[in-house]
Length: 287
Image (cartoon, rainbow, N blue to C red):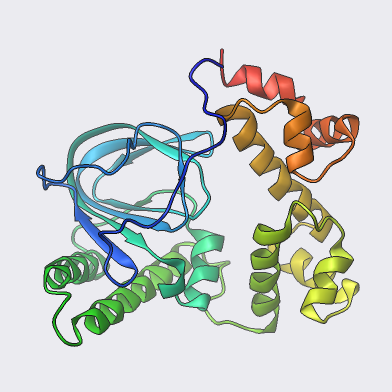
């Protein structure tokens, strides 16, 4: 585990961002990176990459993704990631404050945008995405002018709407229209990301959402295919895997951080979910 940090580094939105968004042109060699993108880290904001040229290998939560342009990729807040290689990169990377992302779009993107998406240069979507992103980059320079920030936000909303529509077309099981079940699912996911360490019982989430446990169970089961309890466990184990792989915390300490007071129970649950003991998982990623 040589070279591991005490905890996973988490970066906030850059101070260079204007009103919650920063557009970086990958072909601009004059840009100086604010942190080392080759080291595992996470961000408190979205990272949207629209690549019009080049080839990349990026690791996101233990999986290597090879991206050959034209393509786009979305990295969600909290995901541990790092760049393994980048050859002749052309395009943009957008850092986006989650507050700027429409709630309906968030739900669609989180359900359907977990892998790089290849783009067709001849498609209308590609032409629109490139035009909108390029326009935002130009406006970013003049963001101090009256109403320019509002214009950038409007263009961003249009771009995310196009992307949500494209993802909804690719993944036909993703609903593009918000309904009561989708609202409950989104609210549950939001609470889970905040309270997963302390709230292990479905009843706690149901009470916060002012619905019955049975209603919450049926909704999450129908929307995701998993029960509420399984979803809670899977989210906790994903965070545990991140800590096992990228920090020096002991298994016992990680179990405590995940809200499990009994190390033996944590170890058994981890193996049930992942098929490996915590130490086996850690060793697997450091051989």
